[in-house]
Image (tube, rainbow, N blue to C red; front, side):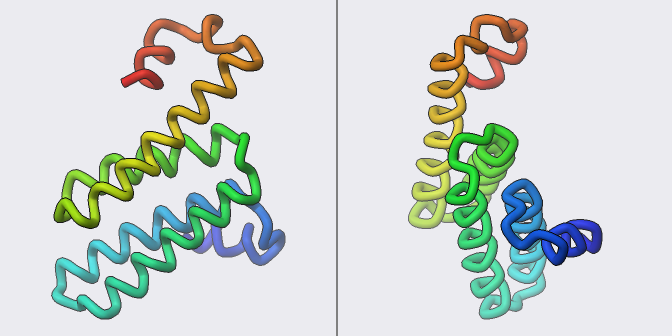
Length: 122
């Protein structure tokens, strides 16, 4: 996280660093919840979501921003109550749909390996 903080200090609009930092904060939020620090966890959770959303707003067509957020949200949704999981799952799926749309538009999807195409479609 220290390296990411440095990258954000150098460029606060670095979308890739923002999404990575947001993922780290989300992880820390989960750790705080496990320790019973629910208020702290809730604040960190919202900060993480906000930071990752800002990253996508800065670079809406960047797969290197969309895929990590989508993967994180889909994975995190598995460990949450349904009312929290559903919005994250929807955002995560929309991130992968956007990446598919971008790859189809620039005609790179069909050039990906079977594994890469399968990962995206899964």
